[in-house]
Image 1 (cartoon, protein in one colour):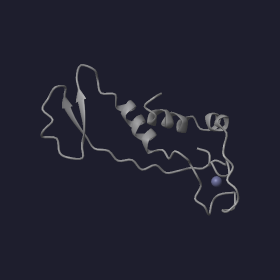
Image 2 (tube, rainbow, N blue to C red):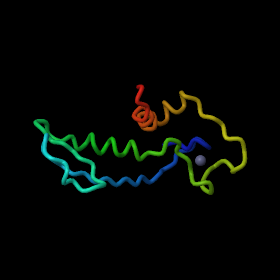
Image 3 (tube, rainbow, N blue to C red):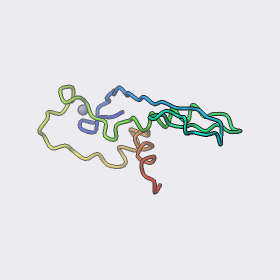
Image 4 (cartoon, rainbow, N blue to C red):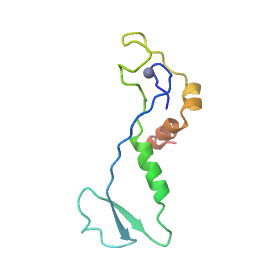
Length: 105
Ligand SMILES: [Zn+2]
């Protein structure tokens, strides 16, 4: 990912935890404990990869930034707004994440 303050590469740890209760399609979900997302499994196999992908996208920060002390640009200077093109070129994942968040897309 690219830091939106200094446009240098930044590596950000992502923490994402999710609990799923897998049930058969049409099964009674009343007994699923609170805090669990219900995953209904029917004829199709469970798309685990897609599921993990979604969770990762949701866990990504919208605006990736360095820790202030690691950033190339001193705090307090004007922060340049990155252009759309720059974001698209440098960080396809953040664009995907934004698409996911926008229900109109
Ligand atoms: Zn930075």
